[in-house]
Length: 318
Image (cartoon, rainbow, N blue to C red; front, top):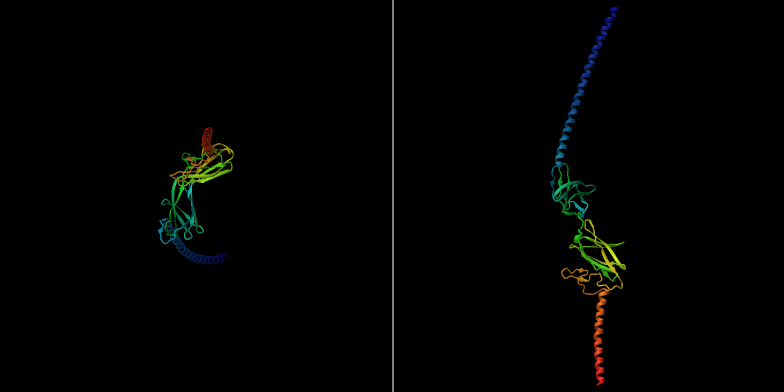
């Protein structure tokens, strides 16, 4: 009985081994098929990746290369450029609706690019130097090969950090008057603004291209009046003068001169205060001339009356 069982057991194990072997072969074939497909897909993706990397490198090189000039492109338009400043910052604004970005040029050299957003570009150029800076712009668009428009006309911005020199300032006015106001003229830095101030009263005058200025009707109070003077240039630099403007006003004062300018110089045709006044307008000088004239008239009249009376008296005696 024992031998029969062992024989049956051997047959069953042989069958199991055959099944196991066939199953392993089927699984091996299945694994080999999936691996081949994976390799094909992987190769395709690797190829695409290489192409993308190559295209990226090509695009980068082309994008960084000098753009191609396109004369048919419309030049971006200016909206605002800082004309003169003392802060070392030049603001550039404009419109470029057809472009992706705008190239900024300073003194014929490209210094930066700025993106165009909603058709508008804005850029701030900073510098520690003083002087004139010629600003121009050009539009850029295209990818990966970019094209550039014609550059705009140059706009000259000035950076001036130097305050006006007090040595160049000349103030001309009279120190005394019998009027309620006076006039001041003079010369300062060209195109500078002159401010004369006393308390809350402020008087301004813009000098012309040669530095000449004139301030009219500066109101006075009775007695001594003291004004401070400051000079500011177009960039905003300010110089406060140490010299004060002092004018004395007296209603009944006998004053020579009226602290106004009423004489035109022949070379410039401008009013210059206190130089060669031909018409006496102050009480003092006018009174002196009137008194002298009246004394002369009375003197001549006295001589005439004395002579006439003497002749009449002499004729009566005879």
